[in-house]
Length: 90
Ligand SMILES: [Zn+2]
Image 1 (cartoon, rainbow, N blue to C red):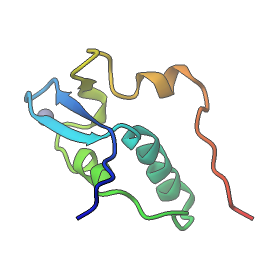
Image 2 (cartoon, protein in one colour):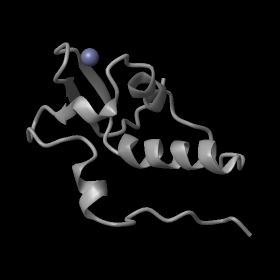
Image 3 (cartoon, rainbow, N blue to C red):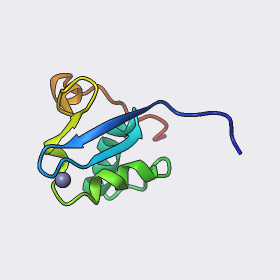
Image 4 (cartoon, helix red, strand yellow):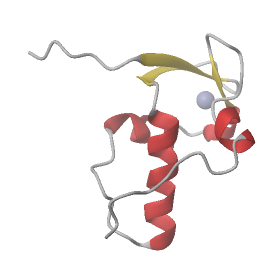
């Protein structure tokens, strides 16, 4: 058993009300996952299981909100331009 625990957050689907507990950085991982799909590049690191939790949800990520703040899940990414950086490509 590992003692280290990642910070988690609860996403709520506005369509069906389902709650999903994922790691807080799953939005960043999700964007990285999309990037690898679009570019065809190999992922620079394994895609966390939590990404597939939201990807596999039938109602899409646009309807997901952060249960704690009530904000849309990807709000900070959409407002921040390009907050994520891919590194180690060389
Ligand atoms: Zn749903």
